[in-house]
Image 1 (cartoon, rainbow, N blue to C red):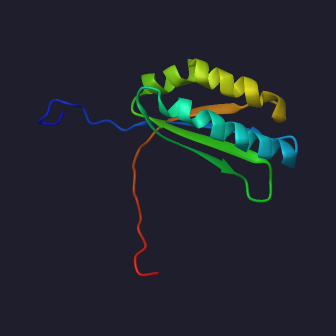
Image 2: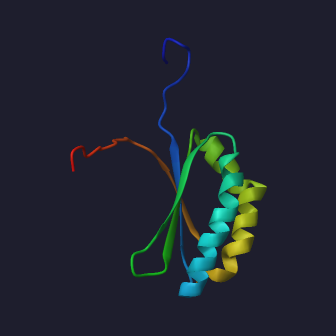
Length: 114
């Protein structure tokens, strides 16, 4: 516990992985992500989110970071996330794979003078 009475804890990271059926489906997925990301950012405990796509492939990885495990689980059940899944599911081969991680460390590396 800090002197301000708050608990220092590592945030939770949620990875959602899917594979788009076609290149066109991948483009549509990215458009939907851009539409939906503002509603995700309004959720309690939200820290950051990013969409990553496989170089030369069709895999997508969504990384969302929340302050607590409860915030992360709340997001998973939230209407905004359900809407996102409903809007993108037909673009995927199979279903999303979702995994929850507790962040163990965070290091930001800055390259200066390059």
